[in-house]
Length: 460
Image (cartoon, rainbow, N blue to C red; front, side, top):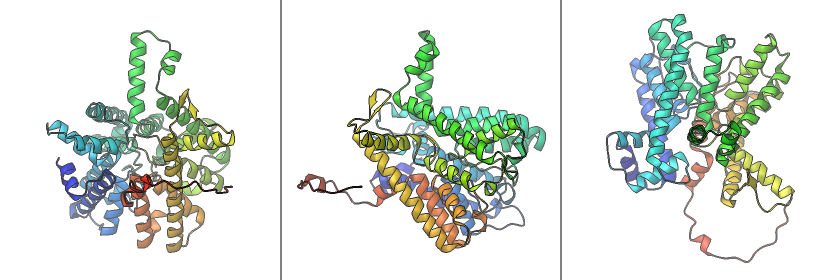
């Protein structure tokens, strides 16, 4: 409840407070998972396993070194689910919501910190936004858990089936990608329309961003009252929502068609399925690749071409102000726009009849560049400490940095150094590489006051 005030005593900078909140949560989760009653009888949990599991939960990644369904007791699974929920919404937002519920004083510094944790541009109606986020999250997760229960309760019994339904609903919404069903993720349910459709819905809802949620709901409500046509309602969406929705649809459809064509005759993935099943599983793969981590077939069976496509989707990730990772859809689209405007000699960047600020373009370039450098650096580090094909290393690191959680069966076989590299990649991927750079960087505000003569540099 007083986490924000406690962290403020450690450091004043929001760039340091937010990563610190995740780090402290990981440490607490590690200690809880090391308790004897967190592990099932006959298994043991060392500090590295507990640290890895706590990190993958808080960073909503989903890479695991032990089977979640078999290694952990109900208490251990409960800890993992709570860590994933905290990681998806953010420790600062959780602590802020507790302050609102208990009527604690919410200072301006608290508001600014919450604004930074959500990565919002304004603090206007921030507490209302926070409350709506929590209500919306609980509503979506609760309804989808009920839908899951129609499948899992008849199969596993009431209490165990209900627990699986709740756990999977939270995990899918937070894009954590962990499940407690069995060793094959969702492979046994790839022909089950309820499990497949509910999981895809949860992944999209968590990854599309809360700002889009509320803009769409407000616009639809206004359109119904004023009797607008569906086209008129769509036109009244904000430029951010239009961009997120249209680019998300493009990535989902493009990814689905790519996987369908490349994997069509691959017996290790979708080759032996009917056309309808191939289409459904290709759609699921395209959606889960963008930071969810559930799988309906072994990822190590993907062709090299599909691996490269998957890495692109994992690197892009979901959308801003949501539970997904990656550099984000808007960031990647702005990077494309920046290149396009340079090639076509355009001074302004226009999207849906709205100009994009230079600060937004610079931030998009910085996020993508630093993200790419982080991926390359971790690939080199993991290659140094393990002897596996580069294709597997690339897939695992992009999955970790993008907080996806899909694996080509590499993570469980990694040694101590390899697991530490993946832990660092997951943590950096969750807090954002640019946030990490900002946290470590010194204040350069004074240097901006000095003017220098313009130099001539030849580029390209």
